[in-house]
Amino acid sequence: MALFDKVWQQMNTRLDQAKINREIDRLRQALYINPNDTEALRQLGTTYQTSNMAEEAIETFIRLADLYQVSKQYDLALAYYRKIEKLGDNERRASILKEIERIHHGLSQFEEAYRTCRQIAEVYLAMNQKEAARGFFSSLPTFGDKDELYRKELREMIGVRDEAWAQGAKGTWMEEQSRTAGPAVAPLPGYPVSRAKVGVTQEEQLAFADLSILVVDDDPNICLLLSTAIKNLHCQVITANNGVEGVDKALRLRPNIIISDLLMPKMDGSQFFKKLQEYPETQSIPFVCLTSRGQEEEKVAALERGVEDYWVKPFSIAEITMRIKKLLQKQLQNVQSQYNAAGAGQVELAGNLGEMTPSDLLRFSEAKRKSGVLQLKSGDVEGAIFFQDGEISRRASTTFITKLEFWCFYVSITINLCSSNHYC
Image (cartoon, rainbow, N blue to C red):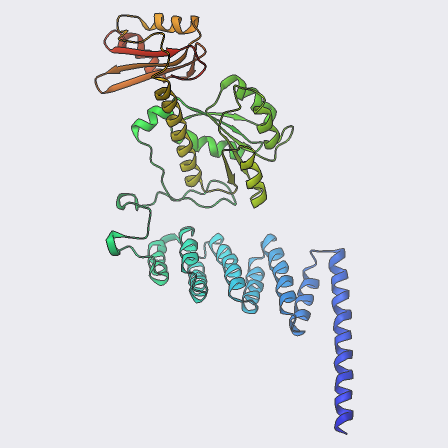
């Protein structure tokens, strides 16, 4: 009798499994016809879950929750994300909890967002990934009126300390005077909120005013966003809508840096870069690729071809401003090093030229097609005009040009101009 019961139980199990398989096939077919059928997804996820097919259930419920989030049915999205979070391992839990936290933040439900952040920190600490917890904490947007309180509690929880450690270590790059964040800035939908401030010294403002950056992007919002960041650094900005227009402006205006989108009509970013390499006037201009394609192989391929840097959208406005600032500083250093390196070379005109008028010097440079730097100095105040083939290659500020004629009668003027095509 016991043998009969065992055989009967096995037969029932096989029948039940066959029934489940037929139901799964039916639901999959329904989703093949309509991938956004939320009811079919719900039934399929439940069937997987009751059949102990945990991974399949998780993937199905993620699709369902994502659909609810896209359609702005946030309560349903949160309900299914919470369901998934209970089914997965710690790594999956951390990923799903971050999605839950983003929804709460987007809805300004700061208390719920804070509670979810604590759960995320607990998961990371359980996996002994304290650095991952700190990295997550550093990227969090503001928590509204209780931002300071919530951040303090999260810092204490994950071990981000403000007090000095051994040998004065504090576990931060920030100096004490720069600890206060600026006002929160959310530049565009989908882009992270930025609270950091990028400082520019008066000396940098004067130096950057002579430099220009060409921004090439078919999205006018991105052009506006980058133009604002560049202007905040007191640098000149030029914009173009595609690579064809970018080539024309690069050849005519000779920018110091080019920042270009990858996916554009008419001529994309990679074609634009290749075209610039055909002209001696533009082939050495630092080229930055700005794109939403963040795959590792794309980055490596771009850098191998000679692209200066590769920035992925969406970006933090503060971070991108600092990156632009570093590029500008590098450009200034390159010009100065070229000048210093050639200073010991052939010099056709040098010395104290205070008795010559600026007009005489400019005419001489134009006639001889000189490349070099005209330096002006009065006490601790210095100025410079850069020439390339007899033309001023870096525009001086309006104030500088206005005062130049008067100033040069009262200052010591030295000039290093050589017949090569490089700065002296």
